[in-house]
Image 1 (cartoon, helix red, strand yellow):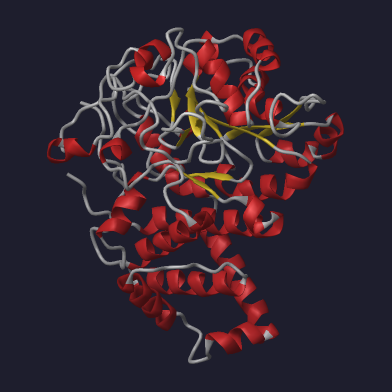
Image 2 (cartoon, helix red, strand yellow; image 1 turned 135 degrees about the vertical axis):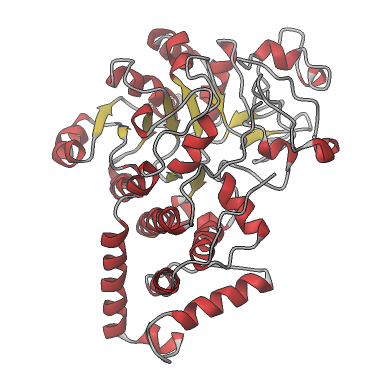
Length: 446
């Protein structure tokens, strides 16, 4: 059974911070869209609690002096909140079959010169976590060496593709190869789990740690519940698609899910590790694969993890597939994007995707990038968690989220950087004030 996150009503000071944060975000140009009436009422209550008098929102937006004051308030909140990981670290080691700590994580993502502001903004959530950034120009490594060293980052250069391209963008092969470049950059040791995504992916470390605590990092895992898939041959497909083939962890338990088993889109095989063969031979999935068990690909069907939602990769998988083998495979394959290119080679190596299990029984929910509106709904949900106005659906969302894709292609680079900082700071405040230091996920393993 799910346990409510807020065991007590937050202190008045927490409510004021939450209200001030909402208003500050609005002033900074981050509009949070909400739909349910209860959430609209909660937002109005939060704004009423903000210590800014009776000045209307419109007047605040028009007042340059108040805008500057709000910026100072937001800065103060950032200083008070500290780094996202400071709050997550207070949770200590997440005890399970395979206890996991902050030191066991490695972050890896590709970037380029235009996206450096996203890297800088991301330091709000990954400061203190080993991070590898892959770029396409050795000059960038030199230019940003000082900042990278101060932020526990290693920057690695790897050339982009040249025509004829193997994927949609020149940087897609570099993106696909990033996990192996990162693994090599830390000499293949010193971590258990890699958080692999885009430069505009935000990871929520408390949720990540709790998700992983019952999974063996030495097992070759590729973990996500946000996949591209096409049910109809000849179509590009959609993302996220709950009907995309996947395995469940072999130690997955249906305890607590018995009354909703009928919601499963198919009988997913439980496998450790998840292999291409396990999916090809599963009775409900066999019709989607040819006799040679080739990966479904664009042109007939699309099958891939979603890069922006992120994927958690075990050190066990990166030790099973060598640097040289993966690089050679990526040079030989073609795909519509970096994530699909990586999936093609993982499949060729014999491995497929493991779903953590929760969203498989709750199709309306995901752990990886769970909501739309480029993170706005999730950002508002965290403020509701701070205020005590978080209803059951809001609690379920916050209990299971591990990542969010901010989508810089929609926000633009400056807007996405602001959203990343806001989301990281708000999550940190949420962790600090949610009223309990116990792990926040319902265990998905027996």
